[in-house]
Length: 284
Image 1 (cartoon, rainbow, N blue to C red):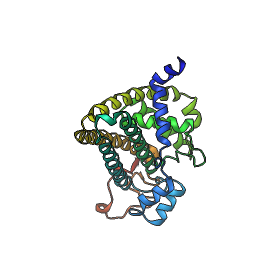
Image 2: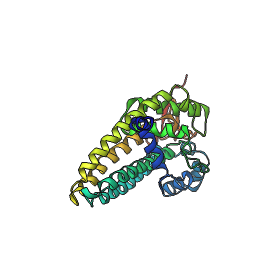
Image 3: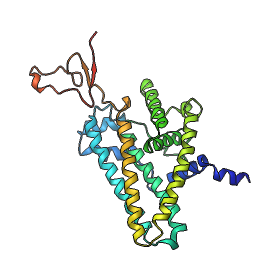
Image 4: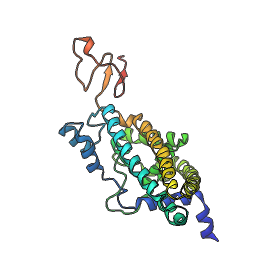
């Protein structure tokens, strides 16, 4: 009886799905390897090296560059997960008991992949321990919050902002364990996990219906995945890019436009205008 109750609990169902997806081959992104490859085409070797040793923000990499790289990663993951979903829909109704759970697992796996890539671009620390196959509680909590942002949950937006603020204030290179597992954010995490468990159940039903007809189900399933995955990824990207944690170091405007601590050129027409990656600080 107890086991049955746990399996019906949306929070537990989502937690099990998240943990299972994290164990799939290829889901965990090597932070250094990803950043090195993703930034190499857009940044100098010195900037890439500093981004690896510290963060892209500390390296002063402009947000418009990070946005381009993030969009490339979103396009890649969307195309990949959509193709896999379409392939899972080819057999039709007979294979539903096998294809739907597998499709959902790989869908969540790609959500994890794109969430990691976006987090590393926008200066979040390494989310997975190399020595630990299982997710630790803090990582599980922050990934739950990321998924909540992807599904448009406002409480998740606020919670992710608080985590980022805490890391910015303490110049921390790891997640705030206590806040995510015992502190004020933990009840929010649990509530969002329950919501995500319900939403994943709805997606399972929708995918079951879309795969019922062979071949036709492939197109519908792939299209449904494409239509949901890309907007969710973009939503997370926009939120992470707007946090103080992602702001490039040294790009501060003090009374006049100053970039990386250097005085502006005399020719005012050549001075860039404040925008993304710039902050205006009034001289007192």
